[in-house]
Structures are given as structure tokens and as C-alpha cells.
Length: 185
Ligand SMILES: CC(C)(COP(=O)(O)OP(=O)(O)OC[C@H]1O[C@@H](n2cnc3c(N)ncnc32)[C@H](O)[C@@H]1OP(=O)(O)O)[C@@H](O)C(=O)NCCC(=O)NCCS
Image (tube, rainbow, N blue to C red):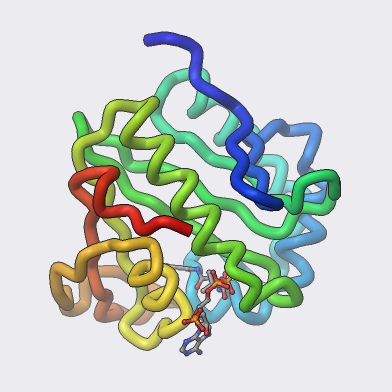
């Protein structure tokens, strides 16, 4: 496979493939958003710390080399601060999952939507995927809007499909099966 691009940009949004050197910035962003993240993300424990961020960054770096996961940090172009992450994971043949989050104090600026568009386009055009799916907690209306705005097609509600803090939760599933389904910014 030809070398994959490690930087993706559109307008002022920049995605950069995760490097373990960025662990402090990733940790800062997670800590600044932990209340919101803890509500929806199984990995976001309230005492999330440096070792967790380092483990994630190393997992991301190794996953990129192995072709099993492609995680990016999200930034404003020219600003070193990490404002979130987006990534393709759970690659199985030509299918994969897309995940995203943004800093709570950067919410509502279109960052998650643009980051998801860029990452999904990367998945189709560079990884060679045929289908990209995502799911969110049935009550996570912000994530629902991001999926809708990117062009993901709703497939339906899956009951008790995931665990969150010891509770089985319902989640809504979406997919893209072509880059043509991704909406223009
Ligand atoms: C959900 C999340 C990714 C949104 O990130 P963001 O950068 O604010 O996203 P955008 O600015 O691109 O778009 C947000 C959209 O959601 C809407 N939204 C946000 N919170 C909402 C809520 N509680 N109810 C309804 N809509 C909501 C915004 O109004 C906006 O839609 P609009 O453009 O139609 O007004 C972010 O809040 C987050 O990281 N949350 C915690 C982690 C998470 O839930 N990740 C997704 C797991 S599947």
C-alpha cells in the first residue's frame, strides 16, 4: 500500500496522525473535557491520567504501523493545542468504525463534523474501505447531529448492544458506504 498521508486539512481544521510526543496535549484536552467524556465514553474514567494518555498514544502509533487503527489529533491550523481526536478503528476487511470527540470548551464550532468528514474520506480514499460505521448512545444528541451532518445514514437502534459503567445501553448505528455520501462542508 502506498504511504498514507499523516496530515489532513480542510480550511482551518487540521488532523495529524497521533504521535506519542503529543501525550501531554492529549491529556490536557481529555482532562478539560472529562465530565462530558465520562458521560458517553467507556474509556473516559474520572481519574484518566498520564499513563492512560500515553497508552492510547502508543496504541495509536503501533496501530498505524500495523494498519489496524488510524487515529488523529484535531487542531486548528497553526495552533498546537489538541482540540479532540478522531479515528478509524476495528478494521475488519473493508469495514471499520469511526470515533470522535472534541474538547468541551471547543464544542459547537463544527470541529467534530469537519474532523469526521476528513477522517471518513481518508478511510475510503487511502485505506480502501467500502463501509464506515459509527454508533452513539441513544441519548447522545450531539453525536447524532455530527453523524447526520457528515451524511451518515441511520441504520437503526440496537438494544443493549454496549456496556457503559456497568450498564447495558441502547445505541443508534449509522453507516457510510461511499465517499459520495459525505456532505460537502
Ligand atoms: C458530540 C461531540 C463530538 C460534538 O462535537 P462538536 O465539535 O461540538 O460538533 P460540531 O460542532 O461539529 O456539531 C455539533 C452539533 O451537535 C449539536 N448538539 C450538541 N449538543 C447537542 C445536544 N445536547 N442536543 C442536540 N444537539 C446537540 C450542535 O447544535 C451541532 O449541531 P448543529 O450544527 O445542527 O447546531 C462533542 O460534544 C463530544 O466530544 N462529546 C463527548 C464525546 C462524545 O460524545 N463523542 C461521540 C461518541 S459517539
